[in-house]
Length: 201
Image 1 (tube, one colour):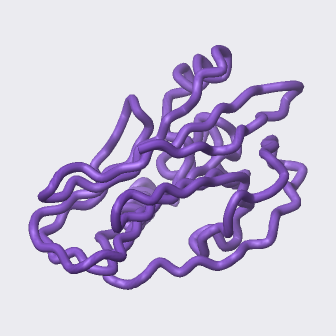
Image 2: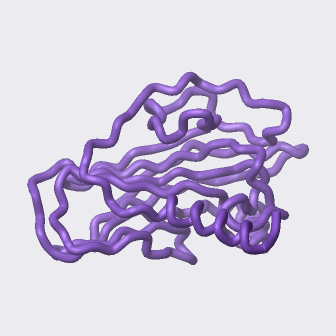
């Protein structure tokens, strides 16, 4: 694949991840608990805490959590995808081998007008996803990809047992609405042990 083709492929992946809010309800479908494959060096709590969203179809969900803030619902999931690796480029990069994340928001309240923008990211590197001029009504959007932190930062978090903190939210005319999701990862005998995800706001 030449460099121009690689550029257009990465651009398509990025634009798909940062698609604007879509005005229809988020559909949730129960995903069977996975049997992790041999090439997935991750272990998480055995029982899924809630039904995994349909967006994770074909993935191996590990653990997740949900936050309810007013008329907003925020979700955050960790999943396994062996294609996500520290030596990969672009959307296939993950500081922890095989570990991916899915974050989403949904709004089910009355129609609101004004300027909106959503944001996602780890506490040290929160990025703006999409900005738009309302209305906001029965809308949802999400982001998925690998652990987009530097290898050095990930190593520090693993060694110190420090929780990763991921922000999902929207900037609205009346202020910021968000949830913060925390989890830890430990490396033991070549296996990454992922804790249950907890939510605060």
